[in-house]
Amino acid sequence: MRTLARRIGFYLLTAVAAVTVDFLIPRVIPGNPLDAVLAHTQGQVITKATLRALEVQFGTHSKTGQWGQYLHYWSNLAHGNLGVSTSEGMVPVTTVIRGALPWTLGLVGTATVLSFILGTLLGILIAWRRGTWLDNLLPATTFFQAAPYFFLAFLAIDLFAIKLAWFPSGSARGILDFPAVNWTYISDVLDHAILPALTIVVASGAGWIVGMRNVMVTTMDEDYVLMAQAKGLPKRRVIWYAARNAILPSISGFSLAIGFVVSGALLTEIVFSYPGLGFVLLNAVQEADYALLQGVFLVITMAVLLANLAADFVYVFLDPRTRQEA
Image (cartoon, rainbow, N blue to C red; front, side, top):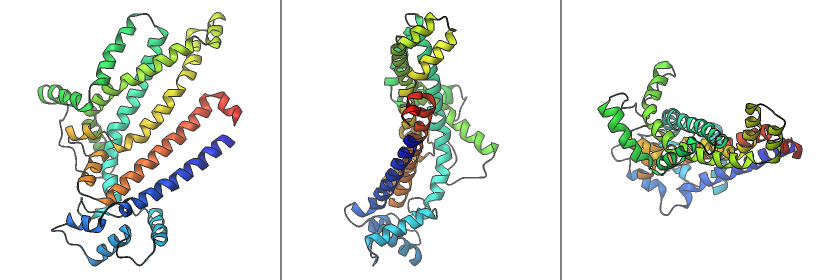
């Protein structure tokens, strides 16, 4: 389809622009990024090869021009080389991200999907049964939406982890502790993710409920919905017709939420001592770890682009008007 082809071309250009910005990060900051990196590596053995690799990566003391460095950066990306992380003991950036990403996906990914599904279904139900006792749920959910993540996190830790001892309050694996992907590892990730994910679901679910409910109420007054009801179609069929169109704005918001899943829920990860990507990003900023900053920024950007591309495909499936335009 021509519409999807144009969108794919747009996202490819955006990806190239994102990689270019990622390349320029250590080159546009004031001062010498290499000196800032070496200042945080006291006590660590830096070989000449590592020092040379850092010089090439940051474009300092290099006879290669900016264009040659840019092409070299693309070559490293093609080979999966994102440099080395000075804040994590001179280990490859890909190793750090690979260790933190499953924890973030297990936490924020699960919480985002659950909050979207529950919030959307409750929003549809409240809109269909408007004027009933279900409307009383809106003020309660809005209260939880206004409460910060970390406030709910402290309450959850005090009740469920300390007093009831149902869930662990911390002591998750380290960022670089990445064993074989088996049920033991997956269950450990999920066990540590349940409590922080619960706080995210409770805090963010209200937004999906209110948004879906408002759009659904408007859609229920459309002529085609009223006609379907007048023809005597089953309620489930009418709800499906209305919800299929009302959910389109939520799909856009969900694609952005999914895209930013990999950035992690920073405050929640700090409260629960959770070794996610948001915690890694904070450490990289504090330790001036430019290679790790570049890697995390690149992963987040690509995740957002892929999520939006997936949302465009879903739009084509849900909205016939999009297919007609295509």
